[in-house]
Length: 244
Image 1 (cartoon, rainbow, N blue to C red):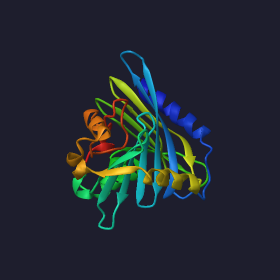
Image 2 (image 1 turned 30 degrees about the horizontal axis):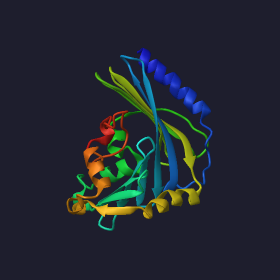
Image 3 (image 1 turned 135 degrees about the vertical axis):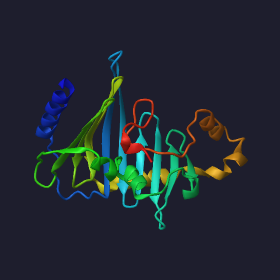
């Protein structure tokens, strides 16, 4: 009960301070900068990381600032998803065709890339009556189970999470939206600057074993092609929002 009361107070305070109300911003072309705070309940230690979601129509980019990595996800004409994993520190990238991406290529998968949480996950939560300024209304969802408590604060017009909290006995992970980037030039630059990187097809990696960069990325476990979305400080997916 104490946790629920604490979350309720946090939600009320967060709504009261929510001042972003530019009703003209396009949900399909923007940047959303998140601050991720993970608290270990055993040690009370916190880790803080930054993440930016970039949207441009049928392509999105997930920028992991601490890792200096960015995942581009693009929905192609047949509805399937292709991805390019960019390593920003090296100006290199690995391209994956839809057949090489280990997901089912459903609407649920695209929603996870586009907005980090699927509609089916939101439908499984309980909706709490809430209010918001003008067109930027906030919807609040919650779920309590034996092993976790989830709170989701959602900006309906932008299809964005304003706040996501998942608490378990061992840790609490909080994603907080700290900035919405609506400048189109800045959004386009987030995509165009990486188009100049040297890329390698995933299927050609075996033919490039002499490439020190590729060998380093393989040894570090950075060359993969799976899910993305809300995650904890170790890069593990959290909540039902990530299950395919």
